[in-house]
Length: 246
Image (tube, rainbow, N blue to C red; front, side, top):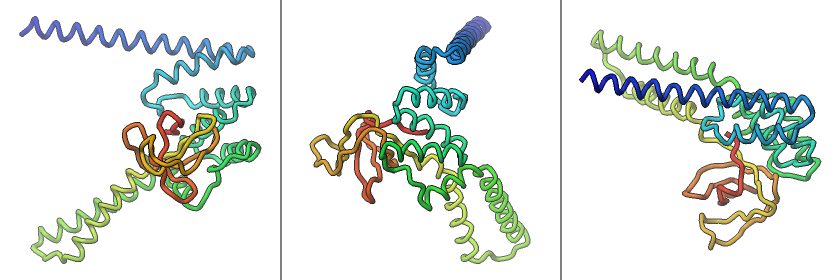
């Protein structure tokens, strides 16, 4: 048993060493990229930043300044689609009016659709920005409701079916709100001309053909296809044909 424990501890330390070494190498690469960016060698910096992003599994760990720099680099290169993608990544994490204004400006200058902010998008982004406070408030209300019901049960009082139904409905609504940020996504077309179909199949009829840089709303997925909302109807696009903003 002791020999086995020593072996497990040895693997554990080896794994930690590998992870630490990898993290240090990534940090060194980012320092190099920052130096290249500041010295005006932005095309070289872009390669390193892109390599770093390709190795990231969870985008929440990506420092937001990387997206700012990549948006700046791609705007200088007149790659408006990638510029909008990186600006959207920034806005998705930190919804601010100045970023939204820049997105709308770039989209308008290139005649791109999907960047208009409707009522739903505004409410959703407002909720996302203050989701922590909403979640805490709703959770406190749920705990209070449970406490009241338990107090009634402890005193032997009957609990009306209507009250039980209200609590259950509230919990379902709370669960939906907690999952809302993950269920709503946007994506940006990354190919020159991309076909939108009415079914998740290459043999399905083409309903629309849209250009690179247009933004669509993702409402589901099926294998290599995304179900999207475009021109007030659900359609399908290949996952490889879009950049998903997460």
